[in-house]
Structure formats: structure tokens, C-alpha cells
Length: 376
Image: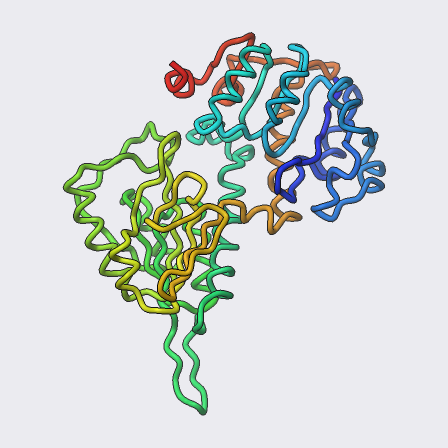
């Protein structure tokens, strides 16, 4: 079987496989790996390093023609998909809930596609392939550093000859993987950290990292949501809004991370709250690509509203491309191994919950139920 690695064509510095992952894959002597020219250059990996790992360097067209399975960080563009034959298997991040037109094209072309952002997160086996958690770790870390660089205050308390500097107050909204990493990073920098999440189960994790949990009673939870938050009642939302407002107006930094798969990000910071915040405060919104958690968020832009910076950035992993690619590539190689049978042949086994759960399209059909409902 031939695996093809493509270079990213969007504004993304990552690469889907590093040389170390190719070395691991090529332990199976029946596999061959083709790498697009300069695929890893933005992650500081050159062609020679891929050659040393055992890969062959080719242009994009040759890779698309000769590969059985094609891997890429971001899903292929529509025009490229239209020119593929139906024997190809694609492994990538298609973000299908927000790219329904691309899903239709995959179906029309009868392409077998696996979207790594769909991998079942309730499975312990899937943890080593969970690109959402890997990239959320990077985003949570980078969000705090970005906030610190844009804030006008120190994070830690300092005792100096010129007086005592109080520690910054950081509020983290959403205590998933990104939020927990943000808590840990902010604490390491010396800030006083508060965290809010509708999932009461994360309280212990927040406190274990040194954060103070902001709790609103009456939250609904759903074990089938795969660790994500779910929609809440209007009464709960009202209590939540007031408590978040009270903490936000006294905070120096706010990191928002709350997202609901397939839906617009919940609005957690109202315009009135931003208007009541201290001038010089910073909000970093990691949910910017799905509408944002604040009323004024603009994706991939920094908004200055009355002296308060609102940074909308959903692509922090690209800014830490080396380690982000290292993590992403390990997730990809682990998943690809599931699809390789003896003698290096492709084996799409739908009895495997990870393969079945990650499959987006197959033989002209959408296999993910939620995506299929959105299309109909």
C-alpha cells in the first residue's frame, strides 16, 4: 500500500506526518510513503529528513495519482477532490459540520474519507488518535502566552523595592482539554486562576491544577456527548450569565474555549460585560471559528473595544507547528495502522468502532449520522 503525505495549502504551518512517524510506519516492509515536495518546511522539516526516514519526494499530482491512502492536516479542497478517482482513501480533518458542501462532493465522487475530528472520544483506545485533544493542548497553552504578551500587567505577584505587584486574575471559560492546559499554564506563570464549566465532573481536575472552580447549580450533563458540553436550560443560562459577568468584570485575562460540535459556539461574554471590564484586559477566544464565545469576536482578528483586546484565534496549533505536528502525526500514524492488514493491504474494518466512528463517507454515502441529518 502507498501512503501519500500532502503539503498544507491553507494558512497552516503543520504537517500530517513527521519523519519519525514515517520511520514507524515503514517498519511494515509492505508499505511505501510518498511526501509532497517541501511538505514539512513550515514545521522546519526538510526533504532530506523525509528521505532519510525512507520516504520518496514527489510533486502533488504524482502523489494524488500513485497513493492509495492520502493524509493531510486539513481536508483536501473541493477541486482536488473532484479530480480523484473513487479508489482513494482520505484521512484528514474535514470539519464536516461546517463544510457540508465538501461532504456532498466526497459522496458524489464516492471517495472513502475519514475525518479525524470525528474519532470517538469515549473510547480509551481512541485516546492515542484523538487529534482534538492534542491540538486543544497546544491551543490552551498558546492562548495564555498570547494573553500574557498582550496584557499590560505581570501574571505573578512580585515583591519589589518599588512596591508589591498583585497577581493577575485569569478566568478560563470551559474546562476541557484546552481549558485545563490554559489553567495549568496560567498557574505556572503565577496568576490567580478561576475556571467555569457546565460539567461539574471537571471540578476536581480544575482544583488539582490550582484553579478555583466557578460553579453554577442545575447544569444538565449527557454521557453520550463524548465529553463535550451540551445545551442548557434558559434558567441555567441566566444564572450562568450573571456569574460569568461578575467574574469577568474583575478579571485581567479571559480565555474562552466553549464549543458544541455541529452548532454555533455558545455566547458567554455579552457586549455589556465587555463594556464593564477593566481597560487593558484581554480576551482570547478559542471558539472564534464557530462564532466565538464573546459578542464581539471576529475569527482570525484582534478587536480593540474601548481598550479591551478580543483576540479571535482558532489556529494556535499552526503557531507551534513543530510540536503540534509531532502530536498530530502520532495520532495520524496510530489511526492509519488500524487500516493496514497483513502484507500492507488496506483493510477498512467497520466492526472496529474507531474506524466506523471516524468514517465520514464511503461508497457514496455519509456514514456519520449527525452529518447525514444536517445534509437532509
